[in-house]
Image 1: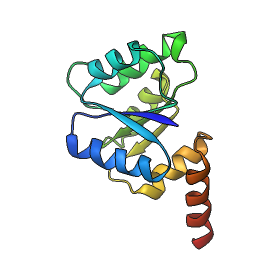
Image 2: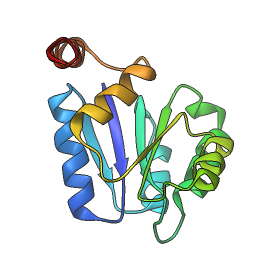
Image 3: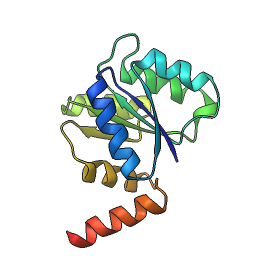
Length: 136
């Protein structure tokens, strides 16, 4: 499965790409909302987008709203990844069209759980999640 990680922090993009790779995803990166939107225009959209809230050019909420307004991307699942844990931010992200929301800091297990809620993953993902949950 393919993912697009959008965050203005190179470190955060690297962390998310590594987590996704461990879960069987092939992840591309975009440094801001505008770059992500341009990448989507190239065609062949990813199955999953992880989007930071605070970014230059387009905020995460603005990017999510753009994606949701374009029927070409109806099947793309979107997880907002943000340091903002205030319920108002969560509500705004979900209202814009995000499917899930996770607050930084997080660990690989938290990402895996959110992806399981979205019914995303392949054999590597399913095996990892199954093993982690059975180990408790």
